[in-house]
Image (tube, helix red, strand yellow):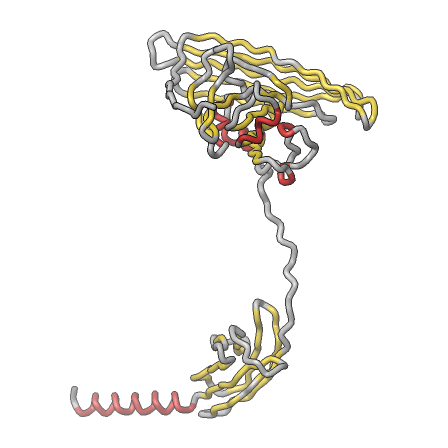
Length: 339
C-alpha cells in the first residue's frame, strides 16, 4: 500500500467513525403500574428497521439511529400498549422510561376444522343415547367419511382404522362368524348390527355401512357373552333413509382384473314421514393363481316411516352373494388365556 492509498484509508476510517459517532441512542426501562419490570415487550421505531424486545429486567436499547423525529411504539402480542413521538439529535443518548398497564387479553374463539372425519354421532353399540364423547366405555368409532376417503370395501379394510385391533384370519364362510380379530389379547368378531345380534359368515361388504363402532375391553361383555368377548365388541351401523333427495355412485379399477361399482340413492316418498334408500355394489377380482377369482354383490333396500316425532319405524334388508375359488388369506394362530 503506497502513501496515497494509506491516506485515503485513514480518511475513510475517520469519516466512518465520525459518522457513527453522530448517530443517536435510545435506552430505558419498561415498568408496570405497580413498579415491576415488564419483559418481552416489543419496542420499535415506526416505519424503520430499528426495534428490540425488553429483557427480564424490563430494559431495552436502540443504537446507531440516524438523527430525526420518530414515533416509538410499545406492543405485546399485537396489542399496542403505548406510542410516543421523540426527536433525536446527532450523537445524543436519550433515556426514555415507560409505564404501561398489564391487561389480560381475551382470546378469540378457536374453531378446529376436522373435515367431518371425526364422528360425534351417538354410539348405538352401548345401548345408550349418548354421544361418543359422553360414552363411559372405550368406544372407537370409524366414520363413513373416513371409510369413503380410504376407499375401504370390506370390514377387514375398515378395521385397520381401529387402534389395538388386529386381524387374526380372514372370513372363510364358517358358521361361527366371519373375519376374526384380536382385541386386548382376546378373539372377537362382528356379531352385532345396529346394536342387535347378527352373525355373519363372510367378509362384510362396506357399501351399506354408515360407520363401525368398536367397544374395547371386558366392558363389552355387559351386552351378552354370546356375541362379545373380553376383548371387545364390533358393531356395524347401517345406512338409513333421510328426508333429502340425493345419491352418489363410484367405480374402481385395479390390477388382477379388479373392478367394482357401487351406488347409493335416497328418495323422499312423503316429506317428513316416509323415505326410502337403496345401496347396491358389485365387484370382481382375479388372482395371481391361474384360475383364481372372487366376485360378490350386495343389494340393500331400506324404508323409514315416521308418523310423529315420538315414533319411527325402520325396515331394511341386505341381499348378498359371493362366489370364488381363491381365498388368499393367511392363518395366524394365537394362544389366548382360558378362563
